[in-house]
Image (cartoon, rainbow, N blue to C red; front, side, top):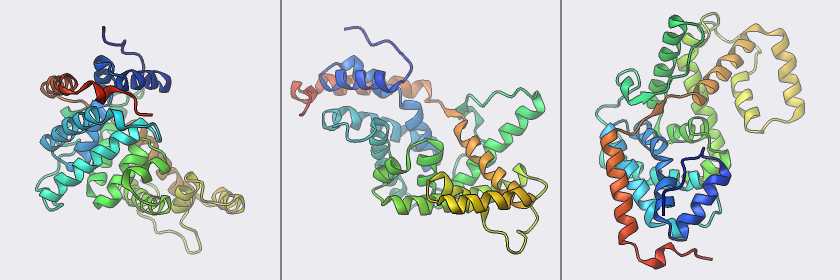
Length: 291
């Protein structure tokens, strides 16, 4: 059977490939999993800090998913299931290094590992500024404690819902939100000098609420309409707090256009070979849909 066309990764197309893969279509399985190779590799890069570890995480994750595809029952998002597998391999890597890698690679140090920087319509200066912001963002992410970093990556960089992030990490939703707010504020503070040169060095005026925290909570649906109204009224008359909110919005927007970590060509070939080996060695029962 010919490999399925490389259509955009829409939900309907993904579901079609998933059903074919679970029924024994090796080409569909390979196509489905390889669509996530860059995302899983990038997640491994940001969580482990080493290209070699990220390559291992990507290969181990996709091979493990191929072997267990019949166990996926569709109770959550397919991407969340993959990230859950990837996260388990990242944890193993961190345990081996006692959670303290000797060297962490950043976008600034190794820009060739990350491609597709957002286009800039403002010319070379604006393009350079965007590169600097993305490099600073990656460094701030790398500086987070692991339990904050993984929440921030899954929720704000990879785009999982708060509920799916909680499933991947095996945490309560409330715990995820608490860690997410703290991670957002830590990264916002780190990037504030680049995002808002006017207010970055200015202390918060007496009596002003922590509007960045309130905005983060609002984005997670945790503020009542009454509190939202009070916050909006305050922002109308407070330049400082308006700037504080704007820096957080800029930060989260930057997360959505993070450069894509491209799987090295040598690893792409290894992944294809590994997936084909798994498919060929599997028994026919592995590919039957388990109802």
